[in-house]
Amino acid sequence: MTYAEMRTAAKANLNGTCRVCPVCDGRVCAGEVPGMGGKGTGSSFMANVSSLAAVKLNMRLVHDAVKPDMSITMFGKKMAMPVFAAPVSGTSINMGGKFGEAEYISWIIKGSLDAGVYPMVGDTAIEQFLIDNLAELKKAGGDGVAIIKPWEAGSVIDKIRLAEDAGAFAVGMDIDAAGLVTLSLHGKGVSPKTVAELAAIRKSTKLPFILKGVMTAEDALAAIDSGADAIVVSNHGGRVLDGTPGAAAVLPSIAKACKGKITILADGGVRSGVDVLKMIALGADAVLFGRPLVVASFGGKAEGVKLAFDRLRAELESAMILTGCASVAGITSRVIYG
View 1 (cartoon, rainbow, N blue to C red):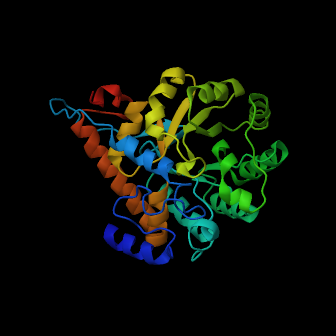
View 2: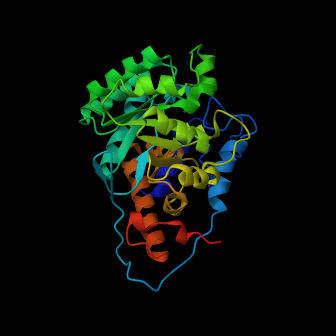
């Protein structure tokens, strides 16, 4: 299967919920939530892509970084590159429903692991979806991360127990889902959390705890106060609040406030290995790769997911060589122009 063949198949299988645009920037699908678009005008989705595009790189070729080491270790796991599959879920809600949640997530999990990276599996309005996702993760030896919606604390802790039973090596909460339309449409109660509430949830498990949906230095510092092990700088793919800046735009200020105090992941608008390098240079320790994997899985199942990751890895390797970065640790702000 070629990359082009995978995209052609995905366009048919996604039943119009994603047009598989040449550039996935949120313009065509603006306002399509449920669906794969951004909320309202779609400006937050678009800002994720445009803020990364605005970052320019210093090309350097007088160096010895000819075979860069793209691997990292995070949460005790060795990874082929600093990328996780983002916790995108809800096949029947957002992706046209041609494939079931279990088969979709099985492709994400297998394709990720085959590529040497790890999947994050998600939670949604339909409770069975998380159960299905964790069942598939358990079949794969628990090699992944479970991200849970910001339900009331008791429900979150119950779901953490399910993740522990599945063998997940880390858990988290996408607190940015407190504004997700697809949850309110199903009458599901989610809400923001106080530092005390987060601390209680964090203390309920010995696994590393990740807080996804941080867009300010203040929230990043609050995450540290709660005892979280990692944050994900993310506006939920532009799907919860119209008019936010892109993740790449706020990442440097967040990294300045808390780099070295907490692990920083970033999510939003990553479409290429060059984008991965940019996010790392702006202050992230690793990134999440989301919408492109929906296309890859619907177009090529697990093979398509691995194909997308392999392409991303080749692009990252090239970008590291052309900016003089011998390792992920060597990707610093010096590669950013201006």
